[in-house]
Length: 505
Image (tube, rainbow, N blue to C red; front, side):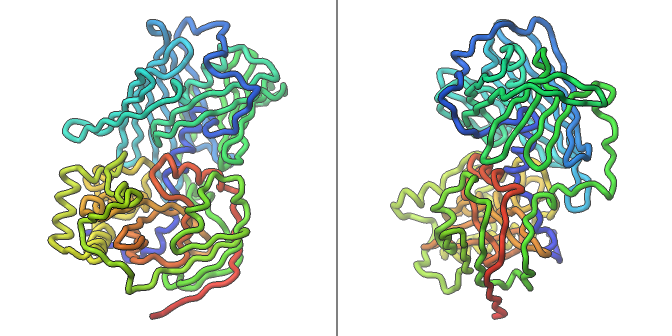
């Protein structure tokens, strides 16, 4: 059994959705964007040329001026389309420790650079995420896991999508000009999100790289209120990209790109850079039972008002109030849940990375909960087990309940994902909550779980809380495709404490 004696120290666990999006943007600084009626669709954007031979591009990746990684992209003509390979190497400071992230993408593209099939993997430490897929008849068939753990999911498509890594290649052969705008359907293999993007060619300007000036086209896009900018030279080669959290990517070479990635104690902490400062100190946050905050910078984010203003929260005219749930809880029920409400029953289903129907997950849930019929008692047992048996360390990869059960390592995302799967396997409806919680004078992005026991009740397996304290501010609920909307808040969210109450009972 692994225990952790300072639970509040590890609160600065950056939501994996934001990390995943940040990595995805390295491939192409576009995701969910406002659509323009003047833009061309991919189908109508006739390509004036193709790629006749293999081309490789190297890039260096910077976070607020500090080099943190590099990428290499290789595209090769293949049959009637192309074969694309992309590798990304990152070395980030997380809570004072160096952490490496490696992603590898291989995909088959048609002559329009639209996706036909792909294989994607992401690795951080001992944890690996792998997914593959194929597009056919406006359906995307997704495969996760390997061997006996292999799972298949079919996603309907409105249009054949493009991978982020191939957007640059499309623009390169399109021969862009100022005033062009392109609507591009994108697919992100890490979050399974499908979004339409609009890229606009807004002007011409000079860009300096390594003291050399290049004439370039400036392209822009907006993502949840975040401006994304990239520059292409006359031949269509990407010179520079800028986006979320001070991310900058510049053209490089095979010799230069991998250099100077050594970790130093002076590096920028990736978690800290995304934290939200607050004007007042909250003493003993685990005992805060009521919190009232003024919230600014939330308008441009793609957040569901029903999530902000439901359950333990009230949100009105820029003010949010959170009250910790108080036992005894009403409507306590037995398990498994046998109600008929469809809006509750869906949270018993297995889904991507919450593999509650997996044999190992079901066996562990039975072992922990035993024959306990009371849903609250069983939920508490499961939450305590996850808290006690997972080593708490930052992991920058996609959480999977099966993988977390195997490795017993992770941050808040891994804790919340495994607990959610164990609850569902025990017949208790459960869902993921993503938002903020307070530690050491600021708010950090965090993940926890909610379970239905006759009413929705919050629990945090990272901090061993049931219910959670009132500094937990829920912004999003759901899986990774919903969690990416958090990105619109980064660097824009402002919080002011108006009132709070602490209980020592």
